[in-house]
Structures are given as structure tokens and as C-alpha cells.
Length: 284
Image (cartoon, rainbow, N blue to C red):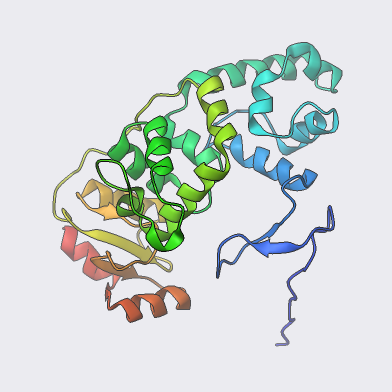
């Protein structure tokens, strides 16, 4: 069977800007132009998804219509939309009414963990957002903590009281979050202005404490757990699920087709590795 070598693009096919890796060693390529129309559209598309702000009925096609009409480029533009403007952009009356209603609902009904995820901060997914909110209580407090951290990457320590962000979600994810917050102050001002979210996330009630004090990460494909399922299992048994490989891991669960880079890093750090079956016995 012949193989086809795929060459990574050097330039964005939409605006022509240089393509970069947002995270060192990451698999995903991004347009380096922050004002690229397609990049902005995809950021909007992620913001409205079910796992984020859950704005039902706001498809990519509809977002493109609104963008082409000059109504939206950034997520907070959505909350300035009016019924008349939506209709003028080509949306039907029913679609426009539903959109305005869904946007209003998202302002008050979406929990803080979803809001934090929806901003598209590199390495900040659902688990990291839950861990941060469980520790600091609100997005405002997370931002305050981030702004008290030194900007020198080699000295990322908290100047404030309590735990630093890095201690909660690890050095890589913590650094990513701190830098994002410092570089995007206006975005968080818009969060406070438009979104009356609940300050704390819905957290899982531990089913036991067999993993108390342990920090765990899974890699590869597991037989009996989805990606979210293994996270929920660890948390519900009193453990902490890590955002990435770091020296604080108690052990790493290794499934099929595990990533070589994660395994290499875990080996270098001397992290214990166990199988899914061993994990299942541990919590049973």
C-alpha cells in the first residue's frame, strides 16, 4: 500500500499570513494574523458550541452571514446584535428571534467553566477550567491571581496569597493562561460586562476517596472510558486530572496508540505508568 506524504502549509489559504504552531511541539497549525477573517469566524464558531456557550441554532453559515454584514468579528459582538440588524443581514424573522433569545439565555444560564472554555485559551479545557474555579471561586479571582504572577517565564510564581495558578493546573497550562490574561485585558472586561454567569462550576461529588491526593493523566485510546469519561472517573474518586505531563503526576494511564511524545516525557520525568486494567482494579 503506497503512502502519501502530506506537507504542512506555510501560509494561511484565506489571508496569506504565515502559519504557526500556537504551542511548542503542538500538532495544530494556526494563522498568525489575529485579524484573519476566517480565523475570527472559527473562534466565533467554537464560542457558540454546545460544550461552550451552547447558543442553539447559531451555525457557521449564520455566523458567516453576520460577519459578512460587518456585525460580528469577536464573541462580544454577538451580545450587541439586534433583531433588525439580524434581519437586515439576511436572517429570517424566526431565526433572528430565536438567535436573540438564545443569546439572552446564554448571558445568565451558562456556568463559569463554560465561559472560561469558550474564550479559546490554549490548553484550558473543561477539566482545567473546573480545577481553576474550584480553587479560586470565580473568573475575576482567576484573573486577579494571573495578574499577580511575574511575567518572566523562568520565574512563574504567585505574588498573591493562596495557591498559584501553576500549582493548580501545571506549569504549561498555567503559563498559557497567565500570558493570555495579561495579553487580553479587554476580553475579560467584556466577560464582566456581558455575561452574568454563575461564579462557580457544577463540580462532581466524589464517589469515594481512593484517588485522594493523586494527580493522574491518561493517554492513548482506552477500552472502557471516553476522554471525558476517564476525567470524570478520576475526579469522582477524589483524584485530580492533569492537563498535561508534568512532574507532579502520581501515575499515567496508558492506552492503545499512546502518543510517543507524552511517553518519552513521562519516562524522562520518572512517572509511573499503568494499564487501564490496573486503574480499574485500583478504583474498584
